[in-house]
Length: 319
Ligand SMILES: Cc1cc2nc3c(=O)[nH]c(=O)nc-3n(C[C@H](O)[C@H](O)[C@H](O)COP(=O)(O)OP(=O)(O)OC[C@H]3O[C@@H](n4cnc5c(N)ncnc54)[C@H](O)[C@@H]3O)c2cc1C
Image 1 (cartoon, rainbow, N blue to C red):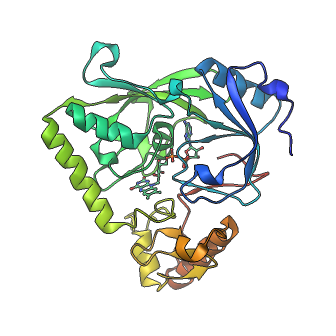
Image 2: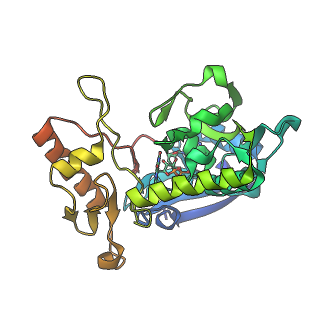
């Protein structure tokens, strides 16, 4: 067992700690080795102290959301991985500050559940997230979204535990949400205030279902993937090109490395073939497939594809 610093880092805190905890089952890809220690904080205070101590002792700290945009290396990761799955971090407070238009959503809350619950209550504003697997924190960090909008469209404020352990709240005017990115500083998203509007519940449910159906008809939602592997590149004229289209035009659909394969349905989905994989899938195969696709698209179109999926590897900067 590899020890991530002294247990005194977390032993006196209100947390649950698991040593050498395999991360694969906590991600959509389902592959990857263990975290030296996986910590489930039970309060913002415990999280803040832990973050501050990790910085003090130079121990890498990573945050795991719902693992839908993550490829964990086969050897796992060093240091501390934090998972906000305690009820304290999964809560959603509707009518925050007594206003029906505001809700406070905690960092580990499931976006899928939030979208469904908002529709049920007749609240409009987050339906663009229909069909996007995410925790609130992961959605905000990635500014997840697509054709129908992104999470940033609904954000009023975000509370982040910074790398110094301090909780700071950033208001709308300080925040910038761009294509799959934000200007939020490094740290852990503890909660956010989202803006919603009352609407007819039937109309809300229909919008959620329509968006979900659209996604299902265009993407292999059931595959062991992390959604789109690459960011859509910016072309010389400033427009964004579809990475999936370039991969398709390069004739790469169906390309395989071991159990990692470019989806026939959507070129930007690099998935594990579970039927053929029979449990032998490895992150190394996926990395090799990513490199092959990047090399081929660069050679054929002179375009450099950059990954949108976050890769975690021992000894590498946390991300
Ligand atoms: C089938 C499928 C379809 C998808 N479709 C889309 C889509 O249409 N649009 C889209 O944008 N994405 C899509 N994705 C990708 C994924 O859903 C999003 O990127 C989502 O935001 C990931 O959230 P997560 O909680 O799973 O984050 P994770 O994958 O767990 O983590 C992603 C990053 O966020 C960080 N992070 C997680 N939680 C926190 C936190 N509390 N504080 C700070 N940082 C944090 C992690 O450290 C990591 O850097 C899809 C994925 C799948 C599997």
